[in-house]
Image: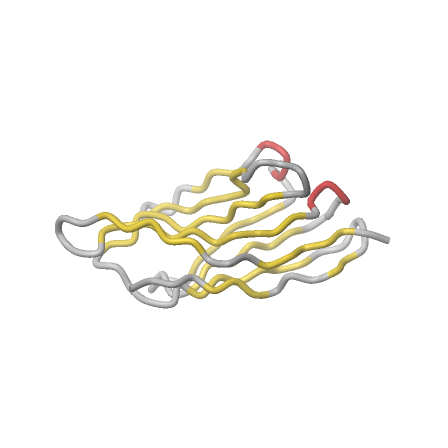
Length: 120
């Protein structure tokens, strides 16, 4: 069973930087992607960034050029480097891990989230 665990959420001033980490908390037969999503106050959950098995990356429009996703080679941990933070980046950030548990079954797993607050 995979249980992602996020860490690194904090209060940070506008313009500051923060790095989030996601420990996958288990292993899949084949991990297809790890990603970060966020949900701000009164908003729907949205994609922040994801990285695929081919190391392709995909970013939400609002974070392009400011955030960078990376992972270790064993798919144990994914990171989200966040620069030039804005108040509108305030949200609970969730880690997502998805892939094949075995040769047949697909798994899609979510962490419980970590809070990032951008405020002066």
